[in-house]
Image (cartoon, rainbow, N blue to C red; front, side, top):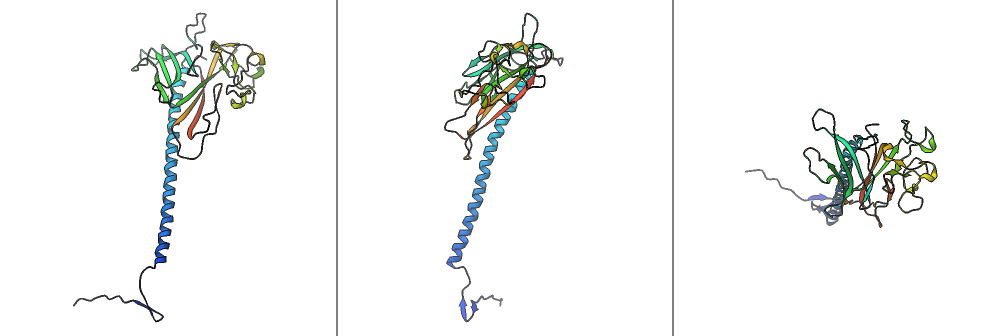
Length: 298
């Protein structure tokens, strides 16, 4: 005969006590479990939102790096012809869809594969939204086209909403960039062409505080107030042939709004424009990249 295990109710102080959980114990256990599950979900939700936000920021930074690489290469290799014929060099600005469009020559191609760039391309950059989806990008046109490339404007970086440029220059050809008030140790003058006539006619840091920002827009029209010949700083219009360094401003925006509750209340300075993203503010992520490129021949 097999042994049987018999479980008897527990006797406690003369009373039989049934083994198990009471209703109150079950309710407490359910409440604790719910709190734990809620905490776990909250952590997961927070991490998920953070991941999505970081992914959007990563896309922005990747697009800006791509634009920086192509622009820096083109600008650095821009060919400047100082002869009276002046066959090559920067051309004047054009304004396309409220954005500056830069045209210039770039000595970039190596058609004979000897390791030396020897073919001049006509380069143009502009902001455009060709498919009309409301998301603009930085586009580049090269003539002749790059090896293996196609003619016409090609997308360099998606999500670039604004594009700006400024230029440091050597007016008198002494090999030194012009600085504020002629001080050799002063801050560099960054000039812009505000009217598209092919000459630098204004500087960006109008209050001479060393920072190009919204404080240089003294009349609040979202354009940096022109500090031109009258200030004595620019000392008259400067031809593009005197440009030695180009400063590039790029403002990129995320593809989607962030799931976080923080809105974008920032103000961005791109070239000689002050950009306020939206009113009311939105939750799109934005980043500005500014970099300087010394022209190859100088």
